[in-house]
Length: 200
Image (cartoon, rainbow, N blue to C red; front, side):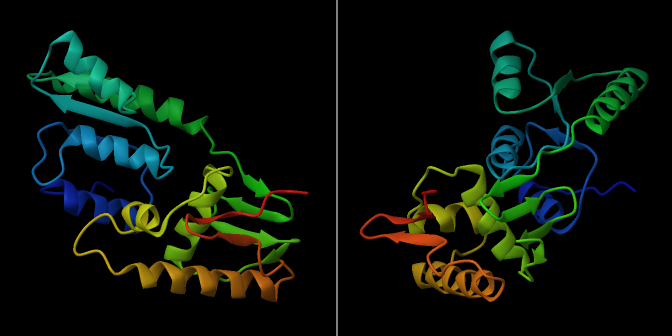
């Protein structure tokens, strides 16, 4: 199955809604260009192979694309046979690139199945709560301000107020508590934001 997005914003909505084996990104995408899209994907923890398509062929442009997180770079005009060969190569590589399971104490988040457990008990969380927990687990020593969380989880449209973050944190704490996690598993660092409680 192949999905086509007319611009970067629509493409991001697809990525959030569905799981993809590979992405083709045009560098000149409207609303959200391919380089920024690529950076945002990697910063949010997406690990699928990314192939950038562009008419820019300078070394600096290629380096910028690869440094943004792309796995390969096809320069227009390209031959379809070559493009398909690059796609097949990336798909073969992607099959062996299984994201690691994220753990913190008794908490376990599996990016492959999108399942969260605590002491082997499933934690019933929403997609946004999952993303929030994944954000903490991928940067375990970092304290996130409400503004930083809003920017990471609500990237498009009109962002909600910072009270929305407070509400999501509260609900996530409650759900973790029901399966045995301490209430301060996600702790508040006053005047700074939130982080995973350091291990003793």
